[in-house]
Image (cartoon, rainbow, N blue to C red):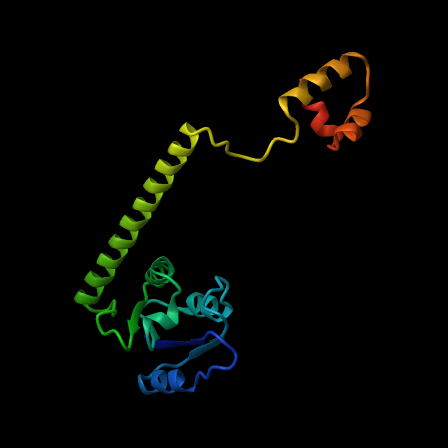
Length: 181
């Protein structure tokens, strides 16, 4: 069982020293350090840390906002930690400690709230899509040819004009013309 620290900063100008010092005081070794924007999904040192976790290890951060960009991001990281049968601890938020019953409860509640929020977003999105369809809003890519042009292409194809010639005259590809039936 080891304590594995993670100390990220979002810009190159910021210093990792305070975080590293706190993590060392708490007995963390190794400490993964990263100077990268928290908005980036690809954080190589965090990925390396998560893959190195073993059963009964504890991932330690100084504060939750140092670890995750959003609730969803936090829950994904916590799930990856749990999948490794490791624990999680935030030094600034003592309730965020998955090795204690109250910590597990708090993070379970947080996960439930995030799932509820995802469901609400999906429902609102679906409702909005339905209202837009009823209002006549079209979905998908914009059509390259109007219905008048399609009728004209059919007529000209019957007269023997080539796909390539028609494509040039309408400013589309020959494949687009070949799909007109």
